View 1 (tube, rainbow, N blue to C red):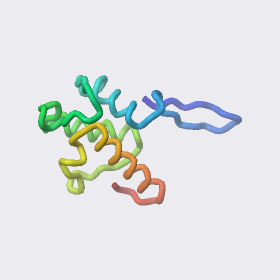
View 2: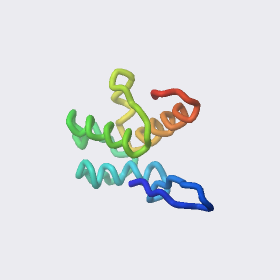
View 3: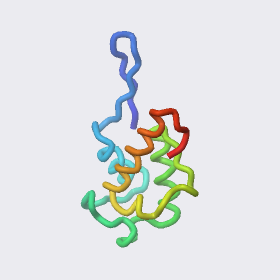
Length: 103
């Protein structure tokens, strides 16, 4: 969930929970109804992510972080663990910061 905070006349977007990892875990818990025990749990091998949850996850990541993840450029291994997803989001955010419209 993103909050807008007014700070000396400027609007600053803050992610509640502080880190990208906290936000990703919250998406799993609140949006996908999946409780992940560890940031290194293999989400695919354990069956925590199926094809429908994958689409929902991508949608929620895009909405939460203001990024675009075209399906044709995504690889399964980028979603194997929470840590892999965090790395992907960091890459996308960096790409968006340079004016690149897509990850």
